[in-house]
Length: 94
Image (tube, rainbow, N blue to C red; front, side, top):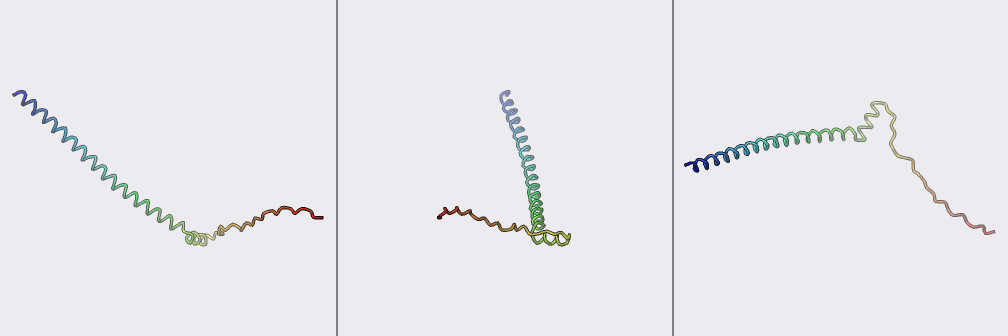
């Protein structure tokens, strides 16, 4: 009889442990799901900000704002650089 009651107590302890583990697992899964939803929302917000930033940085928008603000901006086209190789001096043939 005592042996049977020890087995029942051990099985109950195992069952309680499993319930606690499953409860913790469910809680962790819930937290992961909530974080994933938050990550997707933050990712969308980042994409929207990148799109708005790219729209504002487009050359035509920059030119338009420069005209509105009466800024004298010039296109960055550096003057052409001409490099000439120095020709070796020819020997005196006199």
